[in-house]
Length: 129
Length: 169
Image 1: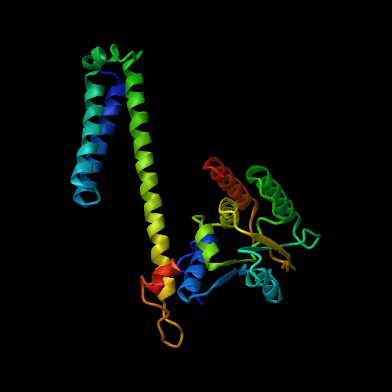
Image 2: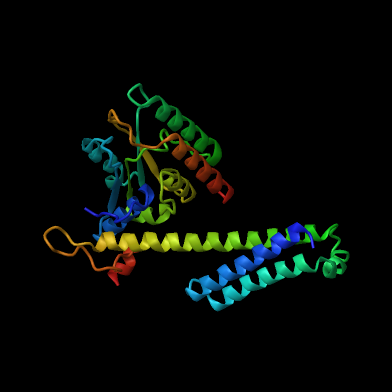
């Protein structure tokens, strides 16, 4: 076993432990933790037994096993970036809405409430209903 | 006075103000930069074309004279020309913060930008909705410490223009 294989296995084991701790803190759902464990176990498997996967490399027309791992990693990272981006946008939108509602419902200096939270309507026609 | 507990950006603040105006059944909404660069005495002239039924959206047009900081003058001039090239609609000043519109027009120009790109997005939506637009020349006060758009904001606005153009503008 080469040095890079040992390094990859050590990295995967450390990440699996970190995933476990994150899951125990309830920062990950069970399904998310399972997905990450699959990634780390897959990395250990590929690193420890590269010869077992050589049969897969040929039919996929990939030159080397390392290329296959890189391609899969890029696909996985692209998916993660997309999901994170959409979630950040969603959170950003909800934060803006929350802050706006707080601003519109804040108390005046004389103690009068400007407007109940959630009562702002964009369409005047709806207001008339 | 409506205050955001955290700074969400100019576009978000403008939207909150408009939401408050609509909730108060306002027919005409006026936007004015809060850095003191606009004169309240210009408000009647800005609102007049709307009250007379000539326009749905009225834009302030600043004089690009020596009073304006050189970088701001260059940025405004460039963005205004680029807007004309990219969207086919020509305005004298696409970045002026003093503008007014009817409550109906607001629903057509309602923007997504939370930052300084809001002015550009509003005009793109106005052009797409074929709103009747009018421009009024206004005075601008520039203080010793410039607090407006920076060069980085200008690049962000340019990026927003490209995005809007690619999305069918």
